[in-house]
Length: 122
Image (cartoon, rainbow, N blue to C red):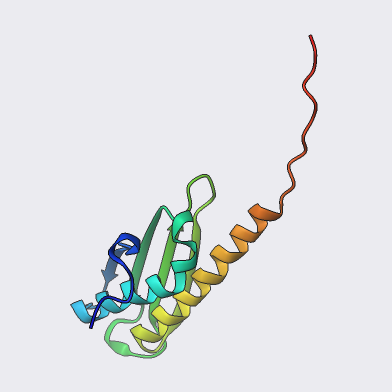
C-alpha cells in the first residue's frame, strides 16, 4: 500500500513527549493525523510542534494532553490543546481543533480589504 500523501507534501512535525513513552506507531499516527487535518493549508504552514504529556503520571484519569503549535509566517502562532483519557483521543481532538483554528486565521486574513489610495504628486 502506498503513502496516502505524495512525498512533496509530507509534513514533518517536531514531536516532543514528556512523562509518557511514545512508541513509533503513535509518532507515525501523529504525522498521519496532522497531514490529513492540515493538508488543505499546507502552503501556509511554516512549522508544527506537537507536545504530548501525561499530567498525572501513573495515577490515570483524563490526563493525557496534546498541544499543537503551528507557525504561520507573518502571523501569530496558533496554539491548541486538548486532554483525554487516551493519547490517540487527545491527538485526534487537538488535530481537529488545529484545523479549525488555521481555517479561521486564513479566512480572517482573506476577508481584510486593503484600501488603495492614489499616488500623490509632489
